[in-house]
Length: 184
Image (cartoon, rainbow, N blue to C red; front, side):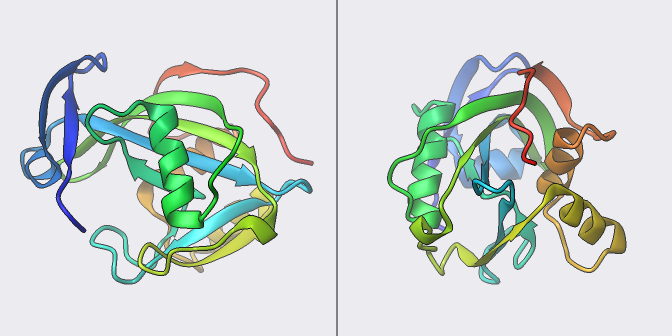
């Protein structure tokens, strides 16, 4: 993965600097991330299996999209960029669901936002460098897979799924929207 510049942020999400991604992760500097949950019209969540070539959580199940927010970008723009880069979706209507802080792993501290939207499965064209494959699951199915430990989940995806399903999680919620899209 090429090195890119990320904004370094304070605990209240104020930009306090700019640094290469490799340096941010080496030093544990707080930066920004974004995630997207895309649901089919019948309420199934698009879940990506990360490429086995990824440096973080290879082959693990992940949100529909997970991205770093590049320096100078805002959360919505990063979400749309991720949809295009990872899933080949050039346009989408997204709603912000939750704004949170989380330690994604050693030296990986982020302030992030989760967005949600609707997807038609025939509009998805994965980038095989980023995504191994996509599957579609109901939220109860995903919780059952998690509980049975039959698949590896990215740590952040597991915590976002738990929060979304109103279960205890490790996210530090900064702001949440009520009246979430709750698929049937």
